[in-house]
Length: 289
Image (cartoon, rainbow, N blue to C red; front, top):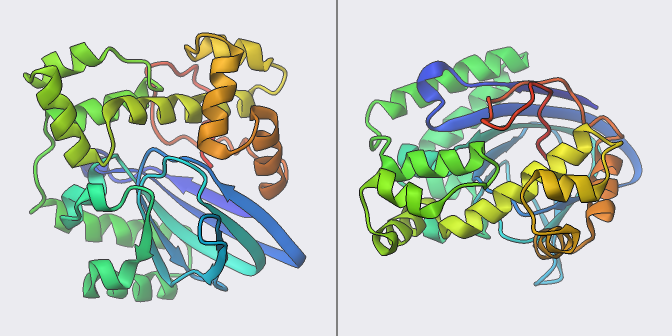
């Protein structure tokens, strides 16, 4: 497996967290990639063979479109079945970055995925064609940077809700919500209502998912650390509190979740990439799934 990561251009960091590209050849029956809860929306461009996705609630198997628009996810509703010659380029957005760039209502994206051509239209279809023509990951990043910077010129402004959502991610969910409301100049009720409209979920739910992602990231980076230590480090009341959240967001225990993801990534979770600076970071590599 070849995997690449890159930060967006400085003018896009309020909209985009990072770009990534994964290329692999998987023979035989394939590998199951569980799609756990995820705090942010993404656009995925399939440049190789299509991926089959198994939807748990529908008990159905569907072939992925060329471009998939995926909203934030609050639980494990899909497993991807990876097989064949795969290559995909992904734009991972800030919580309201996709909405601000493309005027998509976030409340309709949460726990959903759509054909990107159908929702975003001709501009994204043209991006897909250009990405296929590019020879390298660096060329794709440069092209997407240019495309998104043009859209940013006419996008809605970065406001207090945007700042609050980004702060929740940077702090791994460990925030004081009254403080966020005060910073936004809103009452708690006004803040929660505007946040849900703009981000697609309540601030406390985003914070729980962000903490879950941070805990999984922390354990993946430091395998010798016990899950009890991880629970303490990331602000859970105790290990059972963390286990409960993992069960809600992945359908599995913390150990089983990490084991499943290691199988997908062939044990190469630590890639040494750098995507953003967290207020709680120790300077080590970041892990995103």
